[in-house]
Image (tube, rainbow, N blue to C red):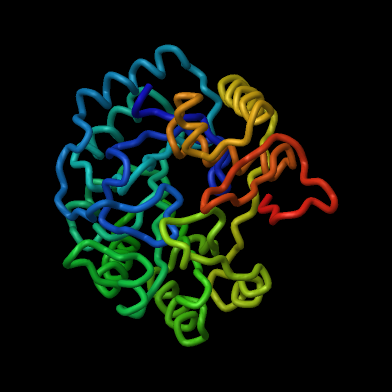
Length: 321
């Protein structure tokens, strides 16, 4: 399948089946921390980037062969900004027909200033929007949006979404060292989050190499120190711990990836090609394997290479696991 990926272990949603509504890096932003690399050209036009007929065919095929997939969520996300696809409400309607599994939406929040987009997402159970900056100069450097998008417009869209949306909203704020972590911007983010009034506020930082080397993680101590300032008190996104349901296709992917990494070190891109997986699937599985101590990661000539096995005491070179 090319549109459906997973199930994958998610730090925020447990065991999640992804549905990719747009081609790789079709996005309204070119965030410097994006784990999928650079956006060639940030776009603002909404259309059926992946036609509904193709989406329907693959979604129906999955649920015909997996009548009880044992998922925590079905997540509309993937390789770009899913709200760009005008087929989104029809996909939600189709999923409601096929499964009782809750539907989540991962989004960069840019299009919620459009009342039509807010109406289209009303049938979703959980929206996980992003807000990384309030100051316009920081927003432009950190998120690098397509022309016409502003931090003020993004926040206004989220405030309107909260007023209209009947489901739950979990707001994510991702911090990059030296950009949005200084006291004045943190205070602006605290005030903006209070206006949006989500059910949860989740703090995050750079976990993997991003589109630019300037995307550097903040310290955990920083996140712990600012967490109580938010209302509701924010949570630091914890590592995923796979439960007993994390088997089947997920376990097969894990074994195949470990077998490949035992033969030779690979980058995430190498694993995509070798195992015919989507980039998001590879990233999620690598996260899980690193958290379990089954692989290590080491930089080499500007690339991050993964190897099977735990880090060795006294190993030279930097271990990033």
